[in-house]
Length: 98
Image (cartoon, rainbow, N blue to C red; front, side):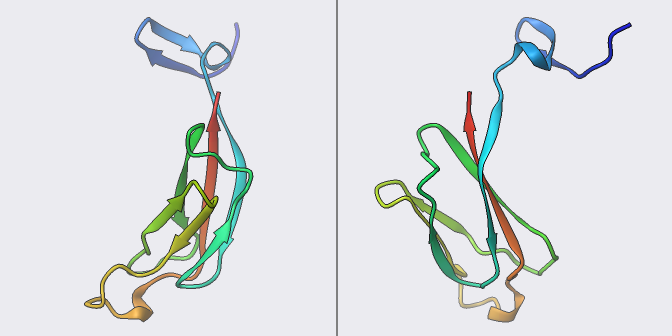
């Protein structure tokens, strides 16, 4: 008996060896409440990014990608939330899909 992972696709269940996949091209550590970073490895036409907190905070800053400069930036989006409520222990995973 074979073991593995199957997912439901439009053509029925398939093992993961037969489906398109993604790979992480960069894992960015964010240790400030606002800032920016250049990520030359990432192309938004080939994938997406996902930001997440490694240590909980009340709010998470929005992230904005600029493809022409390959720069991701982050900052709080409202002054009605205390600056101290935003996290400074974040990660951003950048994926390219196959």
